[in-house]
Length: 134
Image (cartoon, rainbow, N blue to C red):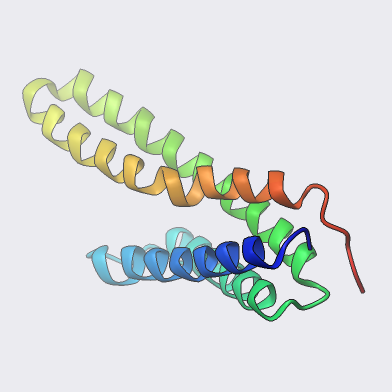
């Protein structure tokens, strides 16, 4: 790893992200839908594994953190893009009523952006020079 302090910061950030995704999907969403639940469960598992590995200084932590970052970035970009397109469609098709729904979708996208897009990009940049041990 590049530094112990950065590993601890990213490890804690991974665990916080996993908790936020778990609460956001499995507590806050009123209905279950398999594609969302499966994607959320995979992101949670990857972030927990990455966080634990980074905090323990495990030799496999860099590889798992890279994989978790790539996964979160891919799914995060898909989520934010889908929310933005849906919000614009609602606003355009349903006028003033759709603007309320678009506002909610925009808020959800704004809340997901730091944890599922920005953090994975920063972590990938940090990990690009980290050696793969083991």
